[in-house]
Amino acid sequence: MLKVTNTLTGNKEPFTPINPPEVKMYVCGPTVYGDIHIGNARSQVNFDVIRKYLIYSGYKVTYVVNITDIDDKIIKKSIEEKKEAKEIAENYTQAYFKVMEKLGVQKADFHPKATEFIPDMIGLIAGLIEKGHAYVVPSTDLGKDVLFDSTTFKTYGKLSGKNLEELQEGARVEKNEAKKSPIDFVLWKASKPGEPQWDSPWGKGRPGWHIECSTMVRKILGDSIDIHGGGVDLIFPHHENEIAQCEGFTEKPYVKYWLHNGFIEISGQKMSKSLGNIWKAKAALADYRPEVLRYFFLSAHYRSGLNYDQDILEANKRGWEEFNLTFQRVEEALNSPPVDYPMDLLELRLAIDEVEAKFKEAMDDDFNTPKATAALFDLARETRRVLSQTPRVSVGAKSLLGEALDKLNLLGGILGIVTAERVSIPKEVEELAQARVQMKKDRKFKEADEIRAKVMEMGFIIEDVQGGQFRILPKK
Image (cartoon, rainbow, N blue to C red; front, side, top):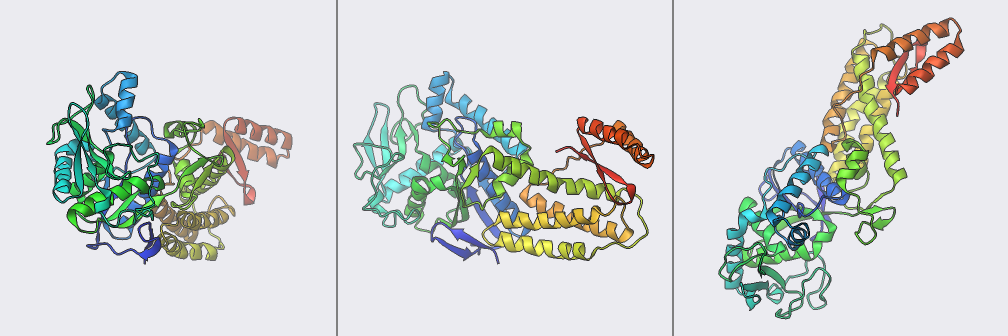
């Protein structure tokens, strides 16, 4: 049975959807005022894997990832660049989708933009005022602010574990002299001259950040959903405020399972503009294959922190390259004429029979991708052991190798660490390798070594195997 760690309870719980086999799942997407960094990318990859595993497990998933396309940061960026906020948001929305496509993150069923739901947000805010959970205060000449009254929601703080009486104004809690309580938050913000604005019962303004997600969740998925995900930094105040808004209005449970992924640190330090260590996902993709980055992101449990430095990522790259080399070697063996002699295949048979159960056991344990990946690597290692005996295999070995490849493609596809690209060997390299075989037979070892060195300069390695045969591999 699948078990997940629920931030709301702090416990690992059996996963039982509200209306099985349907799963309603919402993950906070980007605020589109700049290129996303690898921390954002990790979150989207983590939840992409969770979604794909749920589908593999037989659930019918409706998956929503929002786009926050109106926000203070977007307005600030538009002023700096002297462009319309809409243009800024659209440019970075497209940049986000390009990065997701490169990373193999499957598009959600819905990618709602906040600005498409303004009337619905106004309706939800009006409902909160009517129920006594919100109040209106004067703000600018153009309109008034609407604030959520946190004292009216008695379980405020239940997600973050913060006590209502102990909460103090923090960096992410907006200051406002008109607040009844320092932890009250903005539902509707009056616009200043020149800012994006919409008409409302409270004058011209725009929605607060928290009401955006609450509205889109309810509009697309309904009052109660199964999974809400995002980074650990969103627990308070964003997700805490979502709960207060939705449950204050509907008086129903908002989310059954809250899942939060950990931070990425750069050489042991949190990414921050002040430290100048923000690593953009676009830059990372220029240096590393998407599958290598996904493998790196999945090398730690999604709830855990993940530390990046050059050595760690290079080690991940080498591990992924060795894993991916398995596919090329199997395909070469399957395309070669079979040989007629017995081979030691028992361990491969056992590895094939066990891999899916090991993978499921790991993923059912709160989506433990490090253990799931290890199960695939074990099968790949045993596959390469069989292939190390000879470049040509028996008919029985071909059958088993085909099974192994199918399992690796299926399960590796859920993680997104399998590439469809295979390295083609140039004809000149093949001819040189064949010439080297003859050189060795003629005991011209110096000339054979020279050929091997030349092939390495061309980006390939000649690997000798039993029986005087060889295989050609791409240079790492």
